[in-house]
Every structure is written in structure tokens, then in C-alpha cells.
Image (cartoon, rainbow, N blue to C red; front, side, top):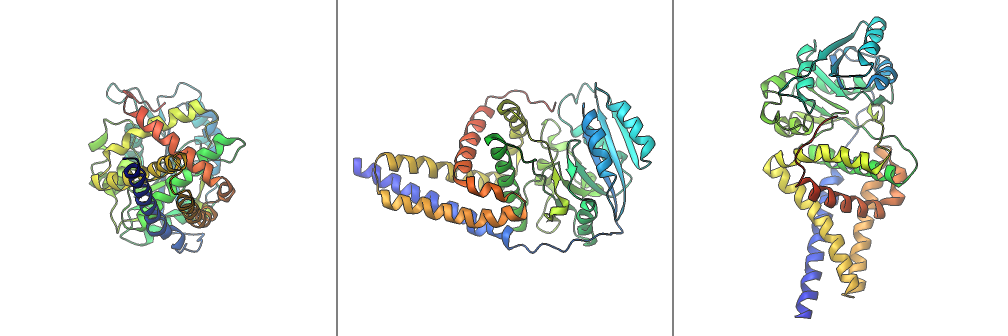
Length: 373
């Protein structure tokens, strides 16, 4: 019986190892093999930037002027003031006087749409004057004056309807910040890699673009309006195809966002976004579940085999080979996503990431109500 248990654990560990190598070398390798287009500084496209803001007066005051420094194309900025109780309306009035291409939409409390920002986003989309829409958040800062023009140049290809961008969190001290940035890196590496495989499943609303006509053709958020989260990932999941979606990863197009500073704040943020995953297409749920379960199983089985002293040399080799593959893929990917300082922490961050993800997923099963802010 004991020998059977040892044999089973060892076989399962090797299966998890093989699955992990598949996602690293077959799926995520596509990201590091991707040829990044040259930076452009002008475009004939017209774009509407949409920002949904609730009680974001300070962020609007600091970050909107940075967006209005964008160069190389014709654009407007649509801010949806979503039931704010701070000084947002006053800040926006001042900014409107400075920037004629700022359009403000005021959303009042609605009995059917008290949580989430899909209703606010819909109002912003309807108010937008242009076909190309680019979404971000009030706390996001462009890293260059050529963010918009490089996102929008993808629409020179008529088949393009969705552009997935990257929005990392600012680097600060402490382990929590490293974990937040690692989680953001992992998420981006995954959705970029899947997109390059012709199977896009999500994007992030901090840096996301799609066509207004696609929004209305797909009936907007109607299919998941009852879910507070998912204004970004669920929309992409339902509307992306192998031919209409592309990625934009040039450093000039990254948007920096403010990270949470406490574990509680980070926990609440992740809980808000957790519920959308179960509404992904069945094929995406299956692929993502296999990826996560194989990683968690690898660590659990590895610890069990070490504890029981099962083929210690063999399992050490498996750990080393997986880590080597991670370092090879992740380092090249981190160079592209300006996160290379995290490479020295990969082993411990990866372990903590999956522990945290496991706890979060279990807790999410019992979460009844999720609100935006």
C-alpha cells in the first residue's frame, strides 16, 4: 500500500510537471517570440478615451493632464462621473475649461445599477464621438506621450476590433508590492500569450481598446450586466476572435497604476474581480483551470514527496527544470514588460501567488455580494 502511494504521488507530480512545461514552452513562449512593431508617432485615426470615475477627484486632477499631453492623433476624453460624493465635479469643471476635448457625463444613482461600472461605461461609450474607444482608469498614468497613437495604429488593419494593452503597478518597497506586480505580470503574460495563440480570453480595463461598433454588435454588457465585475475581461471573452484581436506591449504604451498598500485592500480588490472567471467560455475555463490546478498540484505533490523522501533526486531535478524554464521564459517576458527585478524572486513569488490564489478562490465560493467602490 505504501509503495502504491509513493508511486501514485510520483506519477501525479510528473504529470503536473509536463502540463506546466506545456504552458511555459508552447503557450507562453509565443509571447517572447512575438515581434514588437516599431514605435509610431502619428496616426490618422480618431479615438475616444473613456474613464469611469467614482470619488477620484485627486486622481483626475493629477492624471487627466497627462492624458491630454498625448500626441500624434485626434482624440477626446470622456469622463463618466459615477455618483461621486467628493470634489470630482468641481475638478472636472476646471479641467473642462482648460481642455476643450474633455467631455463629462454625469451618472446619477440608479436603482438597478448600484454596483459595478458597466452602466457608467455604457453611458461613456454612448457619449463617445469616435469609433475607436480606449479605456483606462482615473489612477492610471501614461508612461509616454505616444500611448494612444501606438494603440490606435493597430486599427490601420481593418480586421482589428480589439487591442489588449498592459498596465503594470508602480514599483514600491515591500513583499506585497512584489506579489502584486508578479500577479499582474503573470496575468498579462497569460492573456497576451493566449491572444497570440488565437484564443484571447481577457483584457484589463486599465489599458484596453475596442471599436464602438463591436460593442453594439455584441449587445454591450447585456449578457453579464448582473455581474458587478467583468466590464473588461468578460467583454473580451465574449467578443474576441482569432482574427479581430491583437496586443500592444511597447513600453511607450504601458499605463502605470497605483498598487494597494495593505493586504486587506489587495484582498478586497481581488475579490471584486474574482467572480467574472466562472462566466468565461467553457473552453477558457478548462484551459485556465488545468494551468492553475497543475501548478498548485505540482507544489503540493513536491512537498509531499520531499516529506516522504520519495525519489528526492528525481523530484529535485523536476523542480530545477521547471524553475529553469520559468526563468528563461519569465526573464525575457519581464524585459518586455519592464518587470525584470522580479526575476530574482520568481520561486518564492510563484509559490505565494498560487497559495494566495487558492485561498482567494475558496473564499470566493462563499462571497455573496461584490461592489465596485
